[in-house]
Image 1: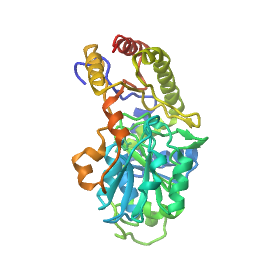
Image 2: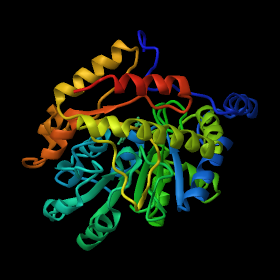
Image 3: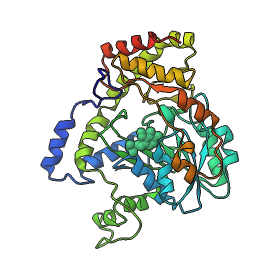
Length: 379
Ligand SMILES: Cc1ncc(COP(=O)(O)O)c(C=O)c1O
């Protein structure tokens, strides 16, 4: 963004992106489901150990596919944390569902599992768990509650690719999970996502929905002699040009994660003392969680402090941003929410949270400048 020497986010190349894009063009297949899409899907399936991974045009679209796959109907209720991105709720509202907004835990800012039971009713179709900042939700409790009530579990894992809960990858607990490869994410192709299908019974229909509601993939497998319109669907396949870019990034995932791990720990190490002195809270990562190193945030004592830190950093040429406006208070949240939401933690933290610049190629000099500017801000 102009006027800032240190942006909040910057896309970076890790190696083979351009070479693979040229290869995709040379293959003569740049629409969806070319060789690079297959390679990305297979890499994700192998690495995560999941039944099916399908690249999509975005995490938003993977969430919309989830709503279609679960046959969400008008009148169904979907439990969604209020502290999340719009798409987590919007995808289900598109199918006519009402959103039951759940509050988050004050430590990890994840779905508060201790209050979940009280939000489940006979109309509940699904719970959507968002692993905020790539730190896993308390999955033991959430999985147990979902199965006890016969409710489907979807993981919005936009932030959490390669994070783990008790040694198991996030995105492998729900019947479905969604990934984002948006420019702001650890691994990116600009705009992109993936649907992870953990329930084998949903795989065939996921292929149809992703292919505009046609059985085109059965046709290519020689299972039907012509393909036609068999279900609802849309165009959720990214171009193989984007998959080529993404495959290069996925191949370099260990290098990317190592860089981000260093950045995250450097922030924590250098800001811990300042934070303690100024009543600022740093991110909490429970011992059972291996985080994805997606972001570094600070929780300031008040909204006024947060706003003045953003201005202070701006005066040093540094762009910092906040996250999220509580969904239950938004115009659409009020219209499509079921009942009255009680989300005091969400309201509190969303007014006090600030995200510091965090991207793979953040240089040591840039990093030192951000840390020094933050430390010059005292309350
Ligand atoms: C929790 C969450 N879910 C979904 C999305 C949407 O991702 P995409 O931009 O890939 O559609 C975001 C965006 O950052 C997000 O933070």
